[in-house]
Length: 379
Image (cartoon, rainbow, N blue to C red; front, side, top):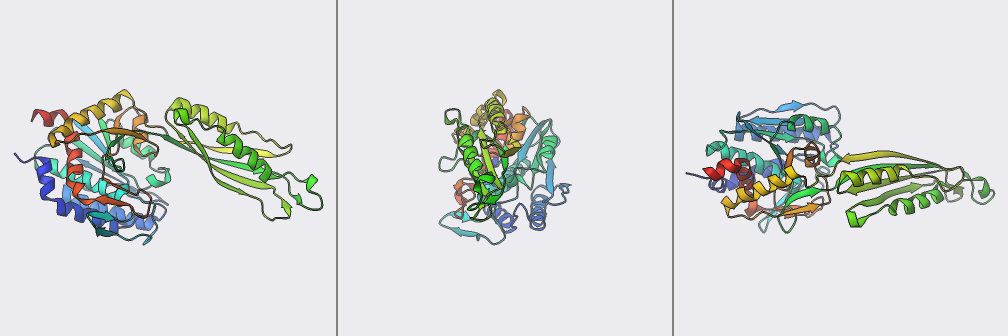
């Protein structure tokens, strides 16, 4: 009997063609018109390969989110894959050379999305989907932190036995991602009092001086021994050289490995207090993505996946990584979640972003085998 891997190897050229189609449909997160055009291309591909129509979740300012449902079996698997990218239109070209495909969003994560679609197609064609229902959940704003899609993702992932995230594999090692840091963003706004820097500086309150104190305090909150990082990535203040600055602004990035540490760090960031008499310090922001922790359901799914992919002669390893994904949300819901099942390659958010073309059928088959799980082993 033909296996899903056999089928995918036979159709490798078509899978690559679909990846190129989706990459060429450029989709900067903040460009609704372009992202919706990309969504239309994605709908066309799914219509051709799986014969289903999208359930569209319209958005006013960002791209519309798309949901595709395939199969009617009792075992529900959700596949997460966003189709927005960090690249502006024509910022980098799509090029195939030396066994690699370069292009905007090819690794993060359009190839993984197409590989997932073909994994499901392979199961349909080889009779492996009878006991399964698949939800392919495609948000359009992941690169922005999923501001408009989080609740929608959680709504449609609810009731799933597991969530497979088709984000790229770990660079160089091709490992799955079994834990991710949670992420938070904060803004620290500082108000001082303007004065002439030469004539009467003593009458002013320097927001820039206060900003320096706040930066030192915020960076003191780093706790690398438990994986917590606090980074002031943006610092703006003042207007003119001869004016005591009356305003300053800090942008702060927080990364944590668990919710207990998130609560500690958030409380500490919000506790920023002025050092200079008369200065005002206001903090806004919160955790945007909870951490994806190595929970018992997540670890059980990873072990099941390791067993399933042995049918491919493949050994799957896992690694904890720093960046977040939409899988953080489903993991926090208590749903077994496994990330990093997409394409292999390097260069996420970099101009040399690319995938390894020869790995496409195997990575697609990996998703198919994890979906099959125990049933596949019994077959």
